[in-house]
Length: 162
Ligand code: OFO
Image (cartoon, rainbow, N blue to C red; front, side, top):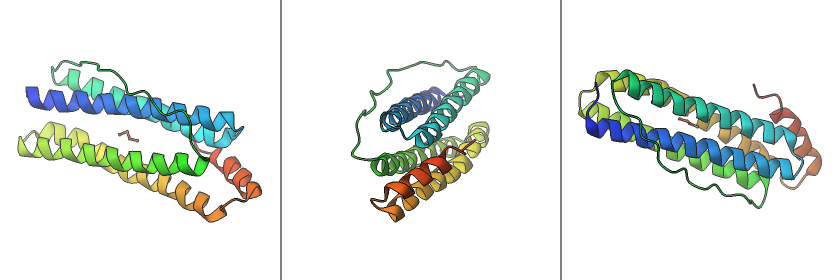
């Protein structure tokens, strides 16, 4: 079982995963509006992964005989200055998620809630990969500057994400 305060923290994280998912879908829609279908694919894949993350929290809370409560999802931003700005926001957002996962992990540690710590360990590792993937996109987009040809090349590369 989990404590009431841990349940609250896990539900809040579940909500953040859904909000992330929704934000990435809005970013995908922005990329679609520019006909950058490869970046849109990358962002939709990210959207789906966040849904899976949210469900992991859902299942874990229930497995611990807790109660899932769903809160409102933040309305995502629809417009951006460029695809470069989109990926800067992806990176910032993943850094924010890393901090929030670490906070829940620290709370589990303080409560000596070893099961929740073990559950969150997967997310701690996942965040290292998520930040690295976003950082790579930011670095590459920064590298190409205003070159449309290079942007289309990166768009094609982004389409390969599984
Ligand atoms: Fe993008 O991260 Fe979920 O947890």
